[in-house]
Image (cartoon, rainbow, N blue to C red; front, side, top):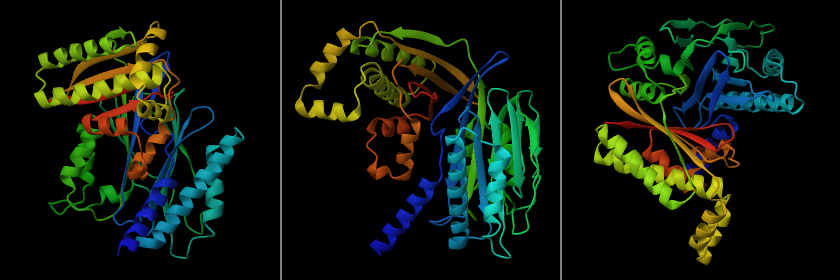
Length: 411
């Protein structure tokens, strides 16, 4: 029994590893002349069984465009899982080859996949799949949807848009396809999903679809929508997979602090933010969680960002008993460096939310490394990330990985 369980876990780890996310815990900062926004993309994948027929990948082209697909292989179980795994592996391979040669072509990417997969499908087998391309520099969005549910878009001026599929599901007989462009310059949020989400039966016996539309329209952000979805969906009928995209206007009213890289300044700032949230009726438990999270984040900014100490070296210094001495020496050496912190409390729905940004000016890191936490948490040694994941409601890094934006819901 243990062997079977281990094999199933390994199979799930493999399935998750095939799905690539170049924007894992990462946000896009738009700085066009006419627009200053932060765009965030969150993916949720909940297979009904160990192996699912849904899959996705979210990729970044050589010139910074966002490319993704969401697929739903026909049927359930091993057959659908094989189709999903083959599709995911192939599409990522084609993408990587195009990116390597700096020649990514959205329509060719889709066509190359169709030309291969249609000869591998059985007579009665089809693949529903959605392809999307977002150009953050022009604000344009191109899509090709093959038998997928309508994409949902909500604009800054409160307009709700459903973009229907423009192609039949892919089968042995698929030869041609259409793409369409959608104006997303005014987008506030969007939802892309497989039918396992909208066609799941809820307590009143109806499909979640209509309730889902309302949950999406009323949701403040990804966390809010996810909580609404869980509240309505008690039992899953199928794999659930969705992308939630939201954007925020830059807020110019942040309280901005610049501190020197030393423990005294860090502790003073944590106390200052604590006083600020206490005045806004934060509960003792929230205050404690926030202080611990800020301490972890600011120490990360100090040690890894400003001082450039990696985890391996830190562990060795702690073993040798020289870590604290080195920190004191480095505080003097790098006293001219700065850590920038911005924070504000905003109202979202019926709650107050602390939003804070911490930038250390260091070399940063590849946020894709954090996927190890989702794929194989028992082999992940990022203690700090695991702590803040439990203490905060959400966090996102910039592309370089040296600036983090955090959210903490209060009362």
